Length: 136
Image (cartoon, rainbow, N blue to C red; front, side, top):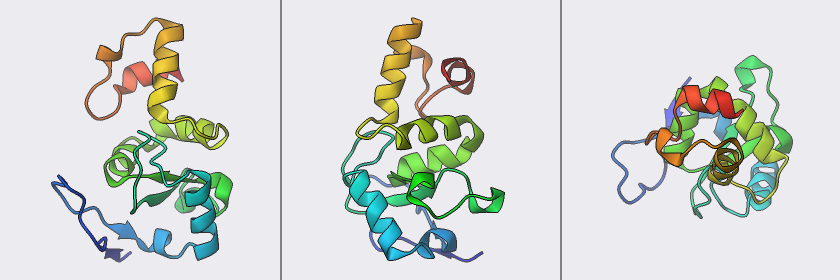
């Protein structure tokens, strides 16, 4: 599968993140609907982004579809985080698609508060896999 480089780099970006042919093959209408639903925000951290990745929650290679319900907006950093731990993040992303206006960080804070887990247990990559498994 050929990869395409983004048109512009983000401030502080320490590496190039490629956009897959799968993402580029999305219908413009579907992509626009997802971005509009997510208000041009990364649904992981809530940061506004002019350039967002539209991520398949259930990958196409695993039978996932190009429907709005299977897609979510992520910035480059969090798209990379999700891909490094796809199985771990899938239930979180599925919850986010069903919960408009809520980010993964907000869900994490809520889960931490209700389960008594302190935020310090989460690592810089967005969450320790062992703790996230307990939370979800």
